[in-house]
Amino acid sequence: MLKDILKILENDARTSPKQISDMTGMPLTEVTKLIKQAWQDRVILKYKAIVNWDKAENEHVFALIEVKLEPQKDVGFDSVAERIYRFPQARSVYLVSGTYDLLVLVVGKNNHEIANFVSQKLSHIDGVKATNTQFVLKRYKEDGEILEDKEEVNRQQVIL
Amino acid sequence: MPKQTRIQTKPKYNISRRTNALSPSGIRKFFDLVYSMPDAISLGVGEPDFVTPWHIREYAIESIEKGQTMYTSNSGIIELRKELNKYLKNEYGVDYDPNTEMLVTVGVSEGLDLAMRAIINIGDEVIISDPAYVAYASAVILADGVPVSVPTYESNSFALEAKDVEKYITQKTRAILIGYPSNPTGAVMSKEQLTAIAKLAQKHNLIVVSDEIYSKLVYGVTHTCIASLPGMKEHTVLLNGFSKAFAMTGWRVGYACAPKEIITAMTKIHQYSMMCVSTMGQMAAIEALRNGAESVKEMVDDYSRRRLVIVKGLRDIGLTCFEPKGAFYAFPSIKCTGMTSEEFAEKLLEEEKVAAVPGSAFGKCGEGYIRCSYATSLPKIEEALKRMRRFVNKYRKA
Image (cartoon, rainbow over all chains, first blue to last red; front, side, top):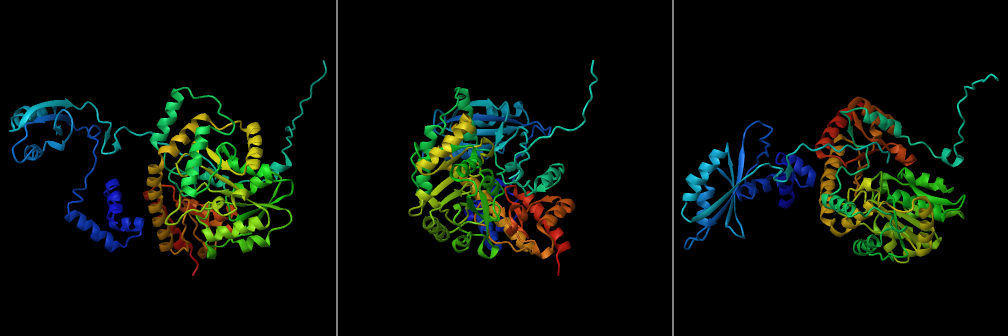
């Protein structure tokens, strides 16, 4: 089943179709077909690595920006959202319930770059009423992965 | 002053005959070696490689913060027993009274010991399967009983057949001790096979002591709790625990369910030897039962994938391996190499640094097999299979 394949790939995108076939008992041809279809249907969007940039000595700054919107006639929030998510700086864009409308996760090389993005780009977009920028001080967990070096739990000697 | 002479003899300790009668674990020396090899891959350990799910750990931490650090009642925290009653009803259709028919034990290990000591008199015979988990025979011997092994075979998926058992029943037979899903074989017994055992127990008025610790770890089949079969509650001591399904080995929490008289007897021993199970462990167990189903399912899904990989991998190497439907063990035959299980395991460790347990450690019928635990990560399993392929190709006869 596709769901089983997706679960395996979401956990480790490098798992080969052959391995998936072994893990699920599905024929290899079936696995390959389902994965191909999933790409075509954009069920699978991309395979990529979760990087701990702090360790790569490559400065990255993350910010969460709350955006308040003025609804646009006929198109609602979607067209404003699109104008925002088209920017490569916007890594994730969500429409949310609560006191603001969009939550935008922005990545930049430094604070300055993010400040520029907010003041020069984001705040000028038609329909954007207000923004509230929160710089990320520390990333603990990213996409389900803990960034701190985990203490290895070792099995002790037991006879059973 | 009188001269003192120092006598150089070592003190002589008299170890009890009962203890001396226990056979030393054949695999201990072997595993001392494994742990001294950092690049060895161990398929030897019968322990989940998962850490206890966080919500369970978190709940236990909270209970410690609240100061729940005192003894519990001997039988175990009543809320835990009530949760167990619900759980067992839902999962296996058995209904045990939390007040009189249940005892929380230090894992199945204690439950097994208590059950044997509570029902066995000197010289009573207890039937066990061969191969079987290493502690079974010892538990019987420690209770001054006599373990009687009934052979099981790969051709029959290592199930314990009633017709074979019947041949070994004597005037002295008191109980049948079974453990399915099985360590070491991964075998699961069908409802029909268990029904035949149940009928035998009723016919000869025997107690079935059923270790069902792996009951949640079954793949594509349903686990039948023998106590759920007609008339069997009166003939069963059901042993189970949290170690395998909930990845809670270190918490040491298990439970025994049986008719009131037997639980009373077991509790008597338990209160003098153990008093009660650790409070934190019991709190964690409550949380496991209330909210652990999703975590269990995830782990079972994971084991299931590894099971398919290891069984297919072993067969691709050319070893015959019957399909294990439960626990987390594969039990391939290594007869094609002409080696004994022990030779095979020793050489495999020495030459390829892969540890597996010789089947002979689990009884005579385990000779010619090795136990491979797949409670280890997939990349490690794949690497182990690669090394084993090299090894088997080198030593295969004809």
